[in-house]
Image 1 (tube, rainbow, N blue to C red):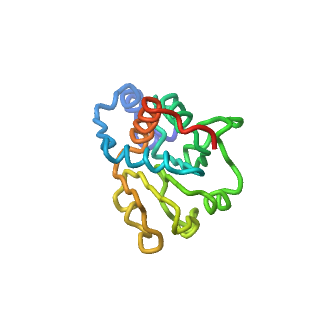
Image 2 (image 1 turned 90 degrees about the vertical axis):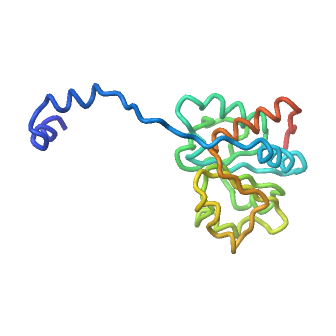
Image 3 (image 1 turned 30 degrees about the vertical axis):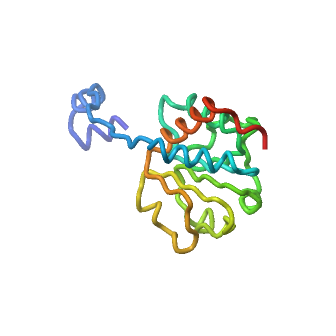
Length: 180
């Protein structure tokens, strides 16, 4: 790689200089609005068979322990996708890996956190019409996609990691949902 970089940039000094620079850009994150966190809490609290589907947007460097704690506070079965795979380890009791479609079809509350409602979830057709569907996503366009196929009862533009942590904190402060 170094030889290639020397050929492209002509100097090893450039590589050393660029590797030693620290990034100074600011990262802006959208906080979770408390009323929308409470809406997610109420949906989970009133359900008997909730499911969480958590994707890449919910995993942030340095926050994995807080996210795991939040998931455990919620206590619902979890399907992980994208870069969130591996978040809970192989043997975590809440981690589900198989029969996601069957589980979704029997759920009464599905929270999709940091995942797009695309072909992997059959564009929302997998979620029954009488099931509460909540989506938390950073991208407003993702929240709008496929609304004509499956409407949502809760759509939140927020950092999924923040939302998940705030939801876990709320459940910890009020009470646990209990086993499913």
